[in-house]
Image (cartoon, rainbow, N blue to C red):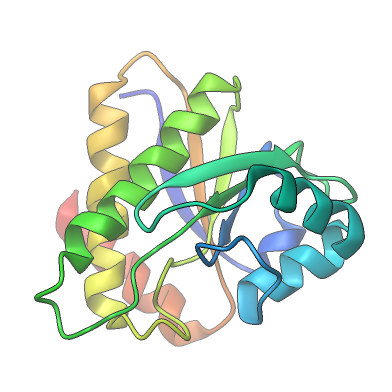
Length: 173
């Protein structure tokens, strides 16, 4: 496995990566949190036009746009599930949002990708479980693509999120 997974404590728009992942809504509209920060930094008008052209994205899927004013080349818009207690295919949908994002990164020759912890904010996915799905999806992708040297970075703001993510990585490796 040539790829790596790491956590950096900074805003996702500050990552030096080829693609940043937006925790998007299925309408690809500008939202709050990570989504709002990405739209604001990328250029809300241009990004809205690009997203409108795509038209939407189902939960568990991902689409790609240019990154406009960001350091990155691309924004991958991944739609994670809203937490409904765990019995509504949330885990499968979240896993799919990650793997589809990683597949898009590979298809666009990205050597690095920055993720938020998808669905763990306003969508209410329990943070520990969200981290476990995220890291498992990334490890599975790297194991399935052993010759693809992708650098995966999770951007987090808080100490507690960084520590939780590091603990999950340590337990899975």
